[in-house]
Image (cartoon, rainbow, N blue to C red; front, side, top):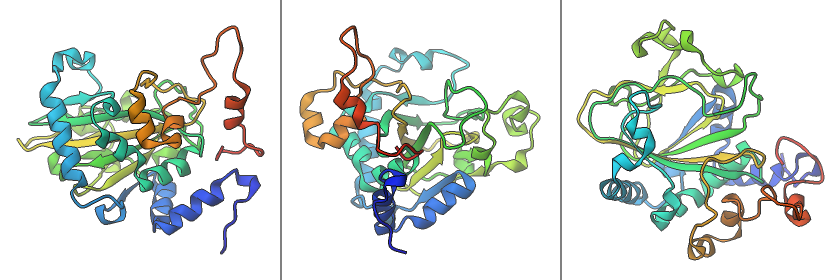
Length: 297
């Protein structure tokens, strides 16, 4: 059917038409049904060498960065094993390209609404054997019961082969509908828990793919036993009311200008929150108040 920019869904018509144009309707269906989807490299619209360039830059950043300077690396019980690289937008323009990719933007706006904010950009790098990452959701700080529509989402650029044998991410399909965080008894046996291993499936993906999942999704990773590199870069988005953990208030203005007004809005340059005694900026408030309130705002 023909879809218009209907007021009752506050811009979703425009977003859906863009997704249709990009050939992503089946991915939307998978996301809604199972909580995750994989967009193959040829559907991302990125140049053929993009994943290789992103991987090379990520490893360059990792080589230059003092791993001891990253707080999470100092803790034995850290939430994820291997290297984590934060605040990537300031590291190189290629991370802005990863964020502003048309498929990334369209899927992000479908999941988080047109007023979405950048939650964070984090690279995960495992250069050798690594333990499993325990099952969790990305809805950090959101108490159960979780809202069904999700407060955050995860869009990951897969940069190396991801299979179960290589320690890929694992999911419980449909768990985005559980609307709660997993507990200790939900951890599967292969992670040292007592839960059912058969509930979990591997997220198989080729380099250059986009792995996309709901913020309520139960996910972790399989143990990695080989010596080959495993890496992906997460572009996380959230709804405009969520407090993003990464701040880009001091990001160089030349980077903001390079990627334009939508980029500026998504990194918080137009956020109405954080005012002092002068009160909020009404025009900024109006940016997140569509004429008809809906989950798509």
